[in-house]
Image (cartoon, rainbow, N blue to C red; front, side, top):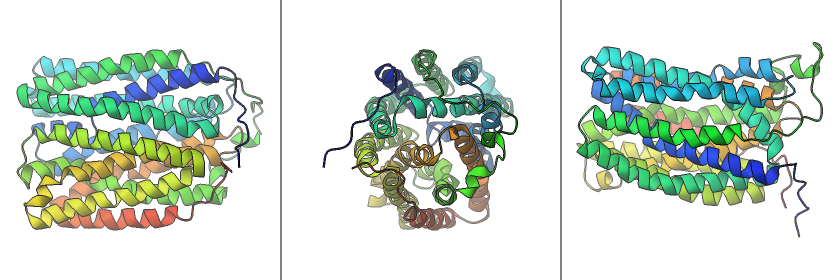
Length: 417
């Protein structure tokens, strides 16, 4: 059976291209400054405290997720969202501030360097979280649902291909440049690649809203908890939170590899390459899955693969070496797949189930609720400090597996055949 024609909004092709450039460059930037490998490795050069190493993930997630509910309430009745999307881009200069501080020698004072780094990371994520609410709303109107998987899959495929080369470069920089100049260069390169992303977002042509709620008693602003009345939303959030518990251990994969398995620091480059190549493959497969069968199937596949990561890390830890060490990059392959799934699966499904005009409410409440995960890296660090890597990886695996089971209850909301 042929698919029904897709009604394309005005400026669809233009917006497809600029969103494509934005997502690609953003993805490459966070290959240079990978939250799962480069950033924890950098923090680990300045401290050996597991909770402090886990703090990087806490700041990153908390800064991005927690302000979004307030932002959504602020912009939901605004006729144009683009000015608010652009306003938050100022936070991107913090990468340059961190790089300059490292080049200036602040790393000689680890406490001061860590404080500045966490402040910069927090400012970036708060600003980007502010931007993202408007970004998702404009995206949902500029790119129809049946073309959204194509956009996200294509962008993640290209950024993954580029990221594979970047991963090799990251390993070379970390191996050949002395600390802290190696990390300064990585943060500067991340800031550099964010420039075309920023330019692309300024070129977005925002589609006009068909109707905008301006009255104080408008139902669109009646209750910030309104999305919880939607059973699909509740199921989505429960599964998303449990699968998101993978963050309990992601910051400690690289530390585990270096301190327990005695792999060299340059292995970070191999981990980045493994993660980005996995995103390449996953973006192709999951993009097709999203377009043909729906985002809920993407969430199921990604969650199932995510469960493999902590299991492999647990096996390597229990074996204490041998061939499990050689396949340790597969931990980052699983991480690459689930990182590809957040946008193509969970967030795309969130946009699908949001009623007309309620995208900011659903996105803001959904992402703010995910702020619960802000503390999971700290919990992971505490669990590691109190017990062992075996306990950390085991608990994480059980939680993620439970999240996968819940994705099986996500109902289809659109017909794509």
